[in-house]
Length: 501
Image 1 (tube, rainbow, N blue to C red):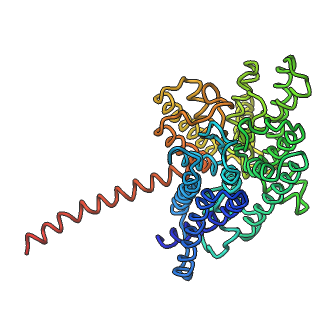
Image 2 (image 1 turned 45 degrees about the vertical axis):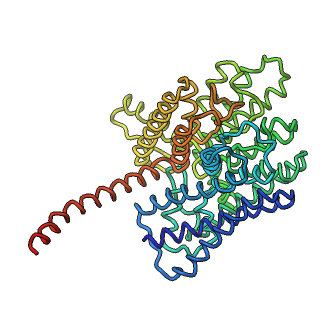
Image 3 (image 1 turned 180 degrees about the vertical axis):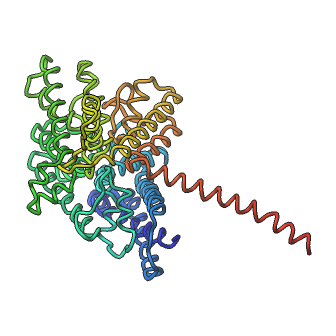
């Protein structure tokens, strides 16, 4: 088992090392040799580790049971975040390793909360790597590994299930490797399309690719201090709006659309609910803000952008929503707890869970009025989905417990209740900006180191939908307790043996 864990860890480090080629090339093109070295050495180390284990243990069996799969996924995400922080720290762009680690975790979990007060002075390669971490983490590093290395063998589906978001985690095709390839092909296609459109709209190539990475990963890192709004390109803003929403849709629906099953995609309950939430939020917020001094066209664009950014958990900015009227701010805060669709790159609770609860509430009210009738829960046209309700309710309860615990951590650090609560919701929901002292124009650099580390845990837990890390921690405590009990039981036996001699 240990060899299987080390093998998949090193394979993923090799893939992550390959991802460093792009920022390395940009650093070399800019003749920034210090930054190039910061990318080169971890790249070579990742390749060396993957190669060593590939030749040493490639013929060993590779099997993961359910518990081990959750532990492996949690460990992989911790290691990949540590790996991603190495070039950030040694580039000299971050004053401490804790800051570099926070930025890396925020990147891979697609949170987009930055500790940097100023990003425009960073090397282009560092900004590109920050955005690329969103792209890698959004679709999932394990899904990428399974797509690229089918020889990972038995256990690939269990690993992807532990990484994938949402309550329904089935396969699109008979083979999990083909499923992973299909999802990543869609991801790459949409990313290339957005990068080309942003370049046509007026962005440079590196800026276009960086923002395409961030958008499709629903992350939020930008190459500009004032995010997308600083470019002054309305066309680019509309492009980002469209692709933020596209990235929030279950990628399995794109697969069905491209394979001639458009009717299935159109009947998806979650997609319909998500569309209603987005359109209603944009319409209501625009109506509230329509009387501002800005022209209606700009108000509508800013509202559409910020609503799309928050509900998709991307975190880009073209306007400061904390300056909006209170009712509009309430709408934004509610969206903190909605999130995108399951199977997308977006974070949050996910629209499907709220859809299930809303339908069950409706059925419960009907049962009260008509106690002798039978009502069933229909999702995507399928009846008898009541078994999903307990799982959804327990997840949402666990989610809010983590938010409250993270709120308490922020309050201990000295932040007011508004900042603490909204920052907690932002970290667990992988959104990025919050309210109060951590609003969309602020950064997380002022946080004390212990709180940054707790936020790293909250971001990872939110990205892996909480249970993965909880199972991993519980498994570790269980193994530790078992080891202590074994030592306690063997100690008297050893004492008797020694006394007998």
